[in-house]
Amino acid sequence: MPCVRPDGTLSGSGRAMLEAVQTDSTVADVVAKTGMPLFRVRSGLRELVAADLISETGELFSQTEQGAAKARSSG
Amino acid sequence: MTAIEQVEARPGLPRLNEPAPAFEAVTTHGPLKLSDFEGSWLILFSHPADFTPVCTTEFMAFAEIYPELQKRGAELLGLSIDSVYSHIAWVRNIEEKAGVKIPFPVIADLDRKVAIAYGMVMPGESKTETSRCVFLIDPKGILRAMIYYPLTTGRNMDEILRLVDALQTADANGVATPANWRPGDKVIVPAPNTTELAEERAGAGYECTDWYLCKKSL
Image 1 (spheres, rainbow over the protein chains, first blue to last red):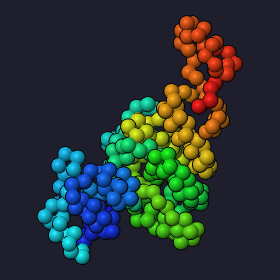
Image 2: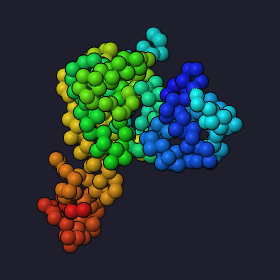
Image 3: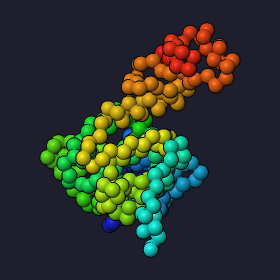
Image 4: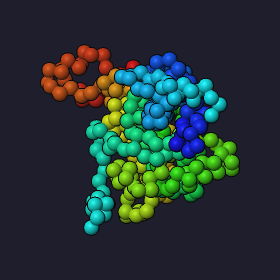
């Protein structure tokens, strides 16, 4: 998967998206913060939500506790 | 006959001005859905096979126009009936041998679901490869244009850019575009559909050949 490697560590794009939602952010916010294309951000956020690293409330995305821990770690 | 064989026995084409067939597919940029592109124009195109000469020239040409497409709010998405590993090897080979980085995702359509939904396989040409198809899908997910080229003939990138420009101009201004139109050229004012409107057109200040063929500058 493009954001989360099989060993659970994050790819560069996965880490960038996780860091972009340190505070509540919309998809457009994440596009602006990461410079990645809209389609890539949508699919990446979907993957990070499925991995329980990001939560989705309405149109806002934010780090889960697990995601915050992952963002602080080097992996 | 299995369900897949039944579908393949009567391949259909998608229709203009109807929602483009939805899909979720494995790509070189991870799993992508058609809905991931909502809000952008999408140019979905197929090629016959990886590591083939005409397709390689086309991929380099698509990469070359990608910045121009992005300026127009358009994304590119390639497709062939090859594995994602083949795609990855091919795009890496193009970068290594030709110095061209392929910046857009490519669908690995091994189960041919997307190819069948979009009528990309032309059995008269090849039963195992997709033809050179181009689908322009607007930001609302509506299929707006289709171009089909045979296996032997590489596509014209200028025409794809021109088509994007023409559709965006038509949408923004409620006009049509004449043959060989280019940005900056005069556009066609839609023909009047009542006698009253036809008479009023005379004083509208357009450049008219006759009441039904009038142009204006934007």
